[in-house]
Length: 355
Image (cartoon, rainbow, N blue to C red):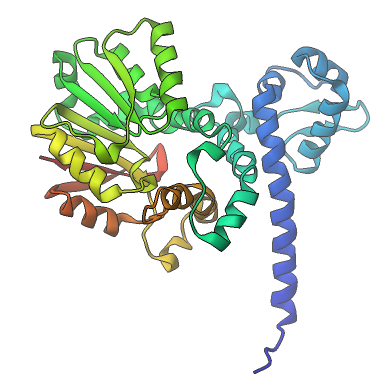
């Protein structure tokens, strides 16, 4: 049956695709603006020429000028054509500078370049179905550490620890804490500094991430935290911890069901499992209303699902959803689970499971 063409609908879609192309370019340029320090420098400058901006940042003027052109045409930077000066408005700086953290959206744009770097691997995986291993993702742990600094570390004391009644007091007195899928370990280091009487451990499959975390604790001189490269599916700790955390880590696992059972076994009586994970519904029609649905499904396809499949896992994907998460937590032995949302972190749900 031949489909009829709705000309208006077709033209609207063409405009949408033009917007996609433009914003994809802006995402890459925004990432460069963040990594190069251009946004940070311009936030503190009056209207300036490309030469003045290049001199302030120590960058090449020709590259700075071309980057500025993308920022101006993308309506991120303002341009005075008569004076040939550029300015980053304070209203824009509030969302793209390091001083704006935890509201620095430029951090997230780095994922576009990171994921673009594995496009060929993911395309091949579309055919063979085996996924792409963690080792293929250049800078992934570095970018995740920055993202974690905003969504997790920045909210630990004011939002996250208070999710568990009495936990701040317990941490101050001294308990044993494990972070599974710890990555670069920033959350555990932050807690270790704040609660010197407690003992903190981080496990992660990535040698790159744990090696970096070990270097950082040596630099900081922290004695109550340690990190270990470990496959979470084979961890054998029994009633060793009072609190276990998992920050955006479970859905990536090759054996998420086994990991959750291992977490349950590793908790002492009265212990708590605190799991942060993506706020997908698990239902595509509902996720169409998610404010960053396309972005999260892209990350899922290009990384989360793929690294799980590469390890022989189920490929849950980032948007596995609350219903499946609760089902798997129950099957792992967590019978008392509540789900919270935090205003500063709309991309995630927070699961608090009691033993």
